[in-house]
Every structure is written in C-alpha cells, then in structure tokens.
Image (cartoon, rainbow, N blue to C red; front, side, top):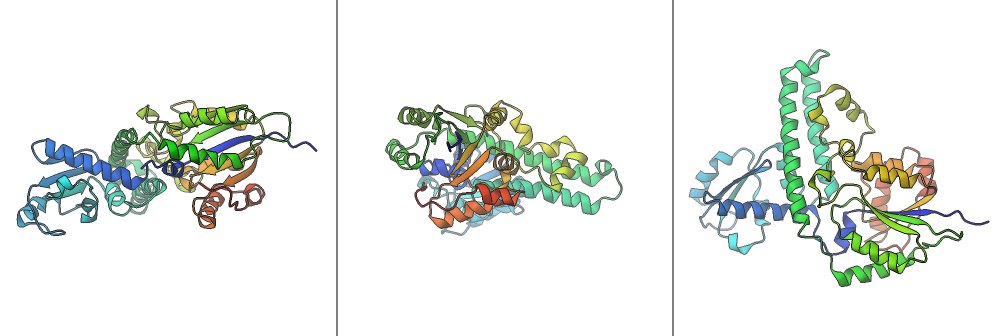
Length: 379
C-alpha cells in the first residue's frame, strides 16, 4: 500500500538559535540591557538612567567587593524599596565599570521578579511571569471587591493601573530585545553548515509516494538568519522537497510592531474571566491579539489545511505559553507524527514530551502521534 504524502512542519524555538551559537537566551539579553542602561547613565552627565522598566543610579565611588561605601548608601537610600539584588550588578561584564556602585530600582513587581528570580530562566519563564502578574492583579480584585460591577470599584482601577504599567514594561523589553537580537543575527557559518549536514540527512524527507512533500519552518524566534538556511536546504534537498517556506509566527526583528510577546494560553477559565469582565488593558499581553497584526497565523492555518503532516520539534520547549497554537497543531486531524530533537539525550526528550502532553486535551491522540525517543534526532 502506497504511503500518503506528508508535509513537514519544523517547529523552531530558541534552542535552535542557541544551537547555532547565538546568545539569544534571556540571561544574555538582560545583561546586555543592563549594561546598555549603565552606559547611557554614564553618558547622561547625571549618572542616571530611566525607562519603563528600571531606574538606575551610578556612584563613582570605590568600595570593597559586595559592600557599599557610605556615600553610595546615601545615594541608594531613595532606592531602598524595590532595589534589585547585587547579583544582577555582579553579572555586568564590562571591567571598565567595575569601580562603580550601581543602584537599580524596578518600576514594578513584574520587572523586579524577572531581573532577580528569572535571570537564569528560559523565555517561557518570562512569559509565565507576565501571566502570574496579571493573575495576582485579578486575585486582588476578586477577593477584595463586592458586587457584580467590579469595574466601578476603586480597587479595580488601581489594579488596572498596575496592568497598564506592566504593559508599558513589556513594550520596553520588546524594544530592547529587538535591538539586542539585531546584534545576534549572524550564526557561526562553519557550525551552521556542519549542523545541517547531520539532523536533516537523518529525515525521510521524500515520501514513498510519487509526490514530494512541502515543508515550513514555523519560526517562534525573532531572528531572520533562517532564510539563509532555508536557501541552503532547498539547494541540498530539492529532489526531496517541493518547497520550504518560513512562517515567522512571532514576528521578526525587522518590524517591532509585529513582534509577539506575551501569553498564548486562552484555553483556561482565568482567560475567559479576563476577557469577559475586564477592560482592554488586561488583554494587551495576550498573544491572540498580536497574531492579528499580520498574515503569519493565517498562512499557518492554510498550510495545515493542505493535508497530512508531521512535526519536527527543534529547540522549542512546547510550553503552555503557546498552548492555544500548539493544541491546534497537535490535535489537528492531519497531524500524523510528532518527532522531538534532543540536545541532551533522553533527559531533554522527556522534558519536551512532558510539555507536549500539557498541550493535548485528547490523550489518546497524544499516544498516537508522539514518536518515541530517537537517538539520531540530536541537536
């Protein structure tokens, strides 16, 4: 019996960029951001910097490592509430600034947490903190407001102001992230060439049927170097693939307005409450309303409607921050197999498998399509 032709979806996450020696992890970005803020503070002539994420003061005093001079303590007194821990400052890499004492104050609890508690987290941890911040505000309103019309309460207005400030901080992070990623958009050429020789040659890209499958890079990253890799693949596998396109589902660094950053799980009761009872400000960090800004999501839906497909997860955690989209892909009637590339053997495969399971409502379908660990599918 002839096997049906199956298209291919390569699910590209941050691990893909990291595998190409790009420093696109959250920790590298935030250290760059703080270092740039420090430079601007010194260049201001006032030793100060401020945006919608932080306030920074710099004191030109020397003191023993880990201790503040008396003069700096005085300077830092206004920052006592909300001042970030010294562990952040110690991570600033430029030795030119080693003689300075730095005070950093977060504009809100969200920023304080992602700078102090999430410095070594993955990007989905930051998105989870956005969710937690909105959930905390909702909890304040829910537990301390009586009556059906919560929008008229003083507490609702106060928490809406909190949400507005979080939205401003997220926009601030996005602007800086785009600027940072523009410095990280060129992978190591030798590493890229060698990397592609191995994983893709292991794939059975040409089906047993007469037709060649089409394929897409479903790119969740914001970098754009994948277009060069797409051209390399098409030249190498033109006898196996009919086409290979890139869908930048989260936007790219070429257009800040298209960058999607926030919460992508609209399949829970909490989201339904926010959508039905709260003002528009509470919805601004929901990914659904960002997807409407361009054609990428519709392009993805068009591809999934073409017929049977297999998914290859490459450097994507498959966390629930993209649950609505991933659930649509995974439980689609045309999804036949999900293959997981690993970077650390069974351990990393299992971690991704746990997350994939969280995106399934139909556990029978999960067992049908999730393929077992394959040692040859290694990043």
